[in-house]
Length: 305
Ligand SMILES: Nc1nc2c(ncn2[C@@H]2O[C@H](COP(=O)(O)OP(=O)(O)O)[C@@H](O)[C@H]2O)c(=O)[nH]1
Ligand SMILES: [Mg+2]
Image 1 (cartoon, rainbow, N blue to C red):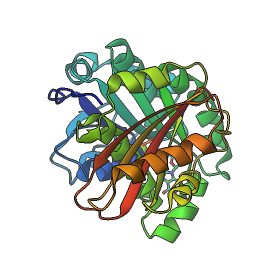
Image 2: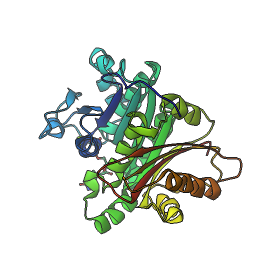
Image 3: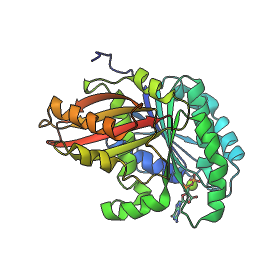
Image 4: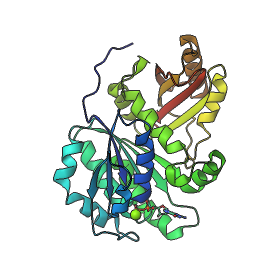
């Protein structure tokens, strides 16, 4: 167990890029306003509406929206480099949410990830991928994807088709993230927000993400008494197909209510440890959320895929 300092102001930053990316970021931030800062970036100023608690950077010509070369929207962002650097320079963890597909997000998100990383931040990007029947948008997305992956420490690919399907069941529109995006973002922020019983810190996250290969993040939920079910629910995510059975490293952040004991936390960590490869290095931390009782949420950062 580690005792660590509370993070300084501006250390945790959520960045929404493009129309849907901004919506996802606003919904996630609204659930934990006091823990992280929010930056919204788009060419469409309506993305900044109804959310006064955000910093905003309007890039490019108003309203130009489709079939934008990634290089172009990336250069739009770079024109505001001095404004971005004010926020990125003090950030330690930057979570970017965007949707790829020939819009503003596809290029600007890559530039922002590069800037944040070279300023020393740990960069995790949530990248929505176009609907399966959107052939030309998919082509744009395939162009941006590898650039985003090499600019970020971890990139979580979310299939819009599968997000939309699952969102219907949850009753939250996919445009608002269907509940998954905010769980991912708030889960990642909470790993760093020093609310822990057993703290994880940025060094742990860095250690996990320093593994070679791809990384992703899963969220599991359930009752503390049913550890195996929580483990299985983590795999029920709207991610693109990715084989996580051979992950080299896993960071778990387990959050439970007042009714969850230290023994329960151990059992849940154990369920993940057993379910993953024998050689997978599992690190875990835990915290109590007073709003919950016997329920548990788990965020799993997997790397070396
Ligand atoms: N079917 C459908 N797809 C959408 C809609 N809005 C956005 N998308 C998808 O999301 C991608 C990104 O949209 P958006 O975030 O508005 O792009 P940006 O603002 O230019 O970055 C598009 O390429 C589409 O694949 C919508 O209303 N309907
Ligand atoms: Mg747009």
